[in-house]
Length: 88
Length: 261
Image (cartoon, rainbow over all chains, first blue to last red; front, top):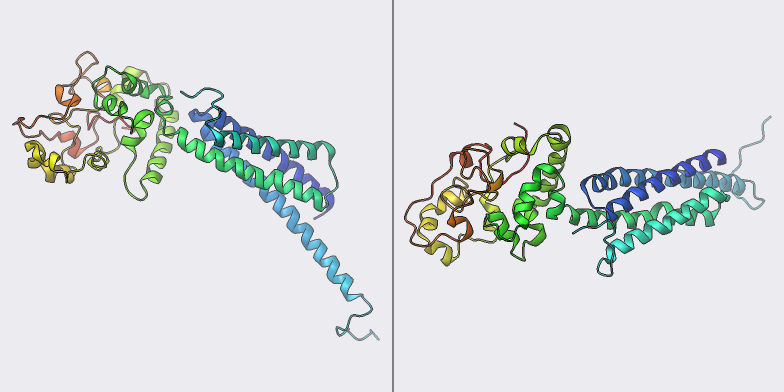
């Protein structure tokens, strides 16, 4: 996942979370049927979606780092792992 | 009474919920405005702003919302329930609902206390039923006049005596000393006779009973048996209401829940 895409996902997640938080706070301050239903369904759904977006970005970032790290270890001078024979 | 800003020193959970949401909002807005690079520090702040703080706000709102849906004022938010809520709040009313509402154990949650199903999953089924009420209200009853609603809206099923017996146990000696109770005990336990049927304790919401039922209008009022336990000298056996034991007709058991025809 590219950095640009990660940032885009995070920005969308932030906006979703802000809308969800607004609905949740509305349900607490004005406990009528419509706010409560919206806050506890749409609001929390948006919150879950935004958190999943954050988790996806972090997981992808960790995967990239792991790949970079593993490739860096392979090229270290002290590496004793068997290496493939040079191509003819 | 719920106001637009019900937060006070007695409502710590509301304050905590709003505080979590406010801090999360600040974090998210700062991220959106400044757009910092996605380093470890930024991720930690976003973990707070997108994960932990919204989780706290959501949990607090869940509890608050759950409590709010138990209040009589919430039930009376739909116009078709206004007569029921108003009757419960009337200190002079002698209906079963109003009498129970004056009991501190029921208080402002008297609708939920009586109508919530009993048992391990009673709360879950009650909430599911509440969602069904909302759906029916939005799709069918929203534009219905109050007079029409009094005739159309009725119980989904006969009101279970189990809900009454949560407090009025049929095992108490005082309950069994009343001849009508003793003679009808098996039928009451089996839900073949409703506690709130005609001839027993009367319907709980007489104001909204359709014409032709026990009390067609508010001026009629409930019989004395609705305001006090039946005296031991009552000789007439309880009259089972066919609608209570057989179907969910508008006059079924005097407890009004919304249900499509």
